Image (cartoon, rainbow, N blue to C red; front, side, top):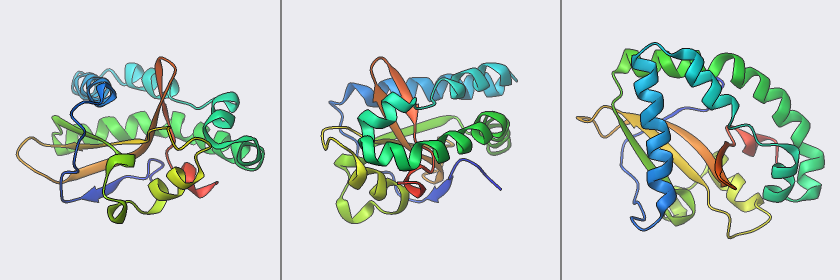
Length: 168
């Protein structure tokens, strides 16, 4: 079972060119592609481990009630992510020869195109000012690829809400 909620998408989403977080997240994933191609799986693991949402951050993102009911499940799920995600990402990057990262702010997307985990997460945010980002890994010659959903900029770092919508 894949622990990353990877979804194939066909069209490139609209991107807000003025959002500096887009380039920051693209840069982080470009580094992961470089590390994967250099077989630096420990570096990929370290990066992913740093994306865990702390209980305090979870409470800030989703409110105290949702944190009380959902954080323990997220934390249990995250243990699987830390153990399996880096290897899965490295494998996918190498097998599919991914070399390009698309990044978009889900909040800026056409509401009709937002569904599933992303919609649940956006609807559950404590502050509607919080931006949710998703990324797609793909080859430069292809518009489709694999998407990882629900990244948040928290302070100076990124946090990942893989499948968090299932627990909210």
